[in-house]
Image (cartoon, rainbow, N blue to C red; front, side, top):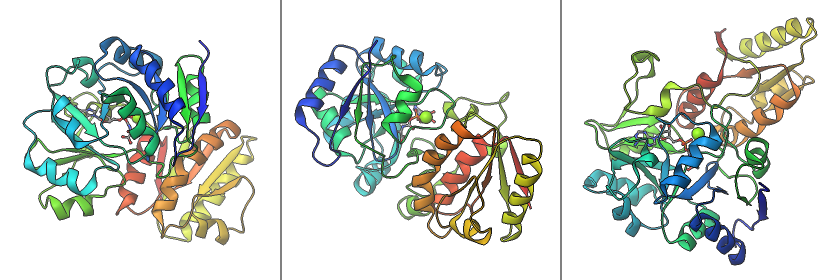
Length: 348
Ligand code: TXA
Ligand code: MG
């Protein structure tokens, strides 16, 4: 199959390219599209066969459910029912935006979408191309991130092509996604509500609307005793194709430790790449094979560069050494991804 790439203006998407893509979706095809977080791999939510193909091309485990993307609040009732008030409050504050809510699934929605769970994950992306595509299809779009399973989520159309070229009908190339990290997932059906996946909408922000909200306690689960409350969690995720070692601790010792390890490992003739904060990069005098992720005082910038940097580095290096960050605000989301992707974690 030849994957068509439509270059699209992210602010004023050309309607004929959107229409063409909607026709592909209506016929049961798969179209990758940008959102404000990462690229999604979309299918018509109500076409079970197309939804099954998403799992196949991504090589995604069948028990890991997808997110349903809507373009307006009127569509909530097409896919969910018994929506709790707290969910509407969250929608009012954060839709459209990088927040996904778990709600009871309407029977009309093929169970494949949510891996046969009675619930559904719902979000309204803050990206013109995504919104116009959903409108043109006239129905919500089911989409996971458009990477091959376990790999780093794609933030450019090139990343999608690297993983899925020839296996999907089309890509809407709207350039790099602005936020660069996958949405926050909140289960509003549990008491208290739980953050299943931290993201750009932070724990601190959510607490202002749901004071009782709690974070999912990852340390309490292991692969073997995992219960399917949040199926995505048990798998290795967001990982570059080469081993990645994370370093945590006080500055500047953590930077010195990274440099020491780089030199040690390079002696064994492995190609070692370093991903480090801007401050560390400057402190170490911009060493070769090093990439600045941005200032540790501006984790929004770090988030927007992280996946892009990892996808570049995995092509060139045998090993990646990376600096961790403080687990507050967006830092919780960053550390959640880094922990899942790292081969080892060293506290300096
Ligand atoms: O930013 C994003 O969320 C991107 C863009 C494309 O919207 N999508 C994305 O999808 O990251 P995906 O499939 O890579 O991650 C969806 C997450 C998974 O961790 C999945 O387990 C969880 O949402 N999820 C989906 N449906 C669920 C459900 N019914 N109950 C609990 N967790 C669910
Ligand atoms: Mg994903």
